[in-house]
Image (cartoon, rainbow, N blue to C red; front, side):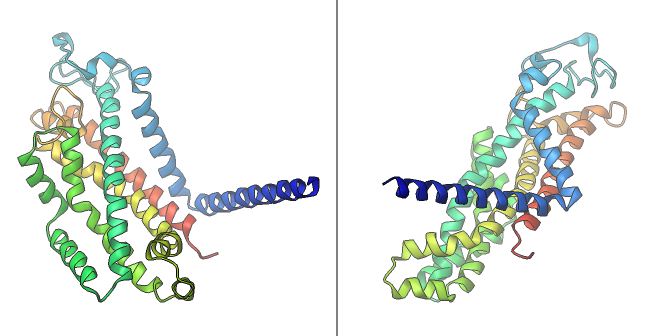
Amino acid sequence: MANANDKANCQGTVVKRDKFIQLKRAWYKFSLNKTSVIGLVIVVAVAICAIFQPWLAPYPHHAGEFVDFANVNCPPCKEHWCGTDGVGRDILSRIMYAFRGAFTLGLGCLALVVPFGVVMGLIAGYHKGQWISTFIMRVTDVFLSIPPLIMALCVCAILRPTLFNSLLAVSVSWWTWYCRLVYSMTSSLRNEMYVKSAELTGASTAHILFREILPNCFGAVFTKMTLDMGWIILTGASLGFVGMGEQPPIPSLGTMVADGAKYIPGQWWISICPALAIMIIVLGFNLLGDGVKDMLSSEE
């Protein structure tokens, strides 16, 4: 009995050591791309601001209903690093609070579209040539023919402008990219020997899809998720810019850019600072996505 326990403990130690070695190898491949490390730093910094903004924001009470006519349109200075807006609110504090909405939109959208799109892609790819595959891919083609921003604007025009409705509007057409990606990978993987072996042993379709094929799609799906975070946030900011995102006084990057547009070029900081925040987020996730792609690559 003692020998069996010792053997089990040794096996557990070996598994943990192998996982640690795999993590070190993955980090080494990721760190070779210095720009990806910069992207990771940007994303982590923005995430920290989004989570801890009540303690990090210099004027947290400016994120709500607040008016300070004594400091209206104040240019960037040591008290207000990004200046103030048309009613005297600190722009930097509002940007930090807007980061939470941006991350909520991105993560919530991915949480909805990735499982649905991946499952549809697996089914369509595995049953390629059958009616169910044809039906799924033709529906996908219909949604792909409409630009995501146009579809989101149409949905938001019907619904009440809120963060949750913006999330639903972006999700309506975003699943198609994951469906198309997984469909193409599944179409080729279904002819691999390990899939044929599972079929010959009587494995169920669900086992083949989720235990044999899906793990081989994780790398491409995760890379696309990282890249899509920036684009989803940019699409949400576009909805806010036209007044179909979160409504005032809730801070929203797109709404802040739109509100400051009427003050350009005199009070440029009101619009430029939120626009730079959007650019930094998108840049960070794009750089991070490149590193994730290198990290998950099967090439040595």
